[in-house]
Length: 493
Image (cartoon, rainbow, N blue to C red):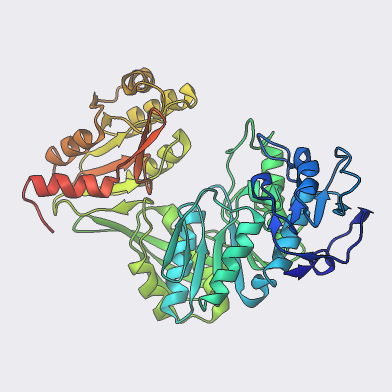
């Protein structure tokens, strides 16, 4: 239990009813979890406004309720305290931090924002710092990692209460550092309030997450990203991105830059593409704030940016150059240009590229390598924009030498109908293609017909381990499919 006064100590508020001399048994923001003695924070969600449950909370003897707007008059006999704040999501973040005894103050906190590169960079940072002896928790799109515990992620950045709970568990498990992805939605909805990041990092910015229930415009999207630089002590920005000055314009932190241009404080130069028995990578020289030669076992220029981001962060932890180099070569991120060995003659990789922008970036990068054919295996999700299907078909038709169109998550649509939409985009190009609706059969076809020097990309599923059909998520991990295919053919590595 905690005193209500203590939970509200960092907030500006008005006590509209009752008193502050209360002991709180729980902090709740889901009306279904209201219990006697709790502090209920009324949050407005996409489908339900918690303010509508204020009277219910009082009836269930909540000790206090936090609101940001007028609510139905509470029962007269109720002793529930009513607290009014400007923004209940903002309040929830500070209340949650206090409820868990401010765990972020016991950790070195690293927050990474940007359109692309967040996930990979968090794993690179975790790899480098742990290789140097630190114990690092991770919060991101794929999972939350606390010691040996891996928790499936629902949102890129969890709600503030959950985030603080994860921080507390990290402290309890002996972590000294946390690295996390910070989405624009999280910044807009104050999920990362209640503490100040030790390091805030900006990777890049492209039009994304703009539309209903997301951001109303690119300007709003950029503004939300920029908020991280008002909530960190040290800011680190990719100055090669055309929007970096917009993102950092109102920064309140110290600021340094990285990139490939001469103006960057930390630079990557002399890039060399590597291909060792089907494993693609890239080597480069680090200059400026540090000086050494590095290599990352992931392909493409964007991998250099991811590595350079991680180096720019880990430099502040006094990690040795040898430890950085060792960790970069060993790092592997599930579903992010993840190479799976199926042959000594050609390369196969899994990537989460599930829209036209990501697919174009991936295929363009891979074309920079000397290779045989570039083969792209992908599908599109059902009950999503048909434009995405046309666009992805066109991208693959223009960039891949051969495309195998298959099923992704059809949801409540028929896979064949989705494939026909992809083919519509494909027919705008001269691209060669085949359609194989069953994803395992499509992957098997790609492996069976692989030619020396080929690069085969399985795009769209990435880290996902399911296929959603008619409202049911069936187990389906592409790594397992590949293992089954190889076993059926008597191939082992």
